[in-house]
Length: 179
Image 1 (cartoon, rainbow, N blue to C red):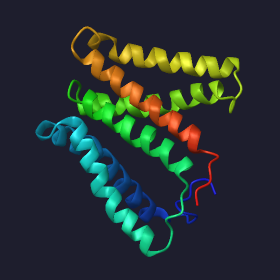
Image 2 (cartoon, rainbow, N blue to C red; image 1 turned 90 degrees about the horizontal axis):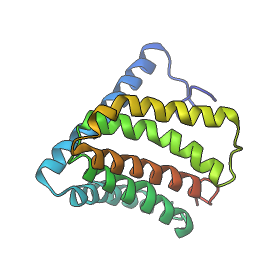
Image 3 (cartoon, rainbow, N blue to C red; image 1 turned 60 degrees about the vertical axis):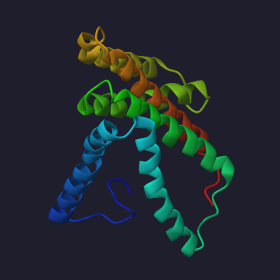
Image 4 (cartoon, one colour; image 1 turned 135 degrees about the vertical axis):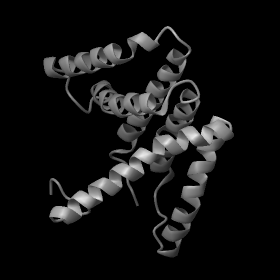
């Protein structure tokens, strides 16, 4: 099932088109967040953004009779993966550019997932794991060390902490029932 989208493998040009749409939509997240927090306080914008998305999705799921996800699954996911992650990201993006935020977030999520998986006993520690984490941390440090002296360090730290919260929420909800 590798390389599939919902179990179906898109062919040729349609696969490339779908990938381009995915990149455009996902990439626009960072720009829309930066524009939104320039006009609305960051935590308010993050909350309104997800509320605007959650209400129609909840109504669609309710209409189909598919609202059966236990609170033990929803709470860690909603709190850590959405509220904490995007709240910290929105606040952090008031201090750093959206491109920097995207690189920090999208590189820290897998690193934090690996480190927290080891900490939670879901993955084994090895020299390879240690090397991967050290190389990732060194790469981020080389990219962003010149910016640490300015006011952006707090924003970068908040975005990194949000990514770690996202990873932790993913680990906590991984084996929980989904409905």
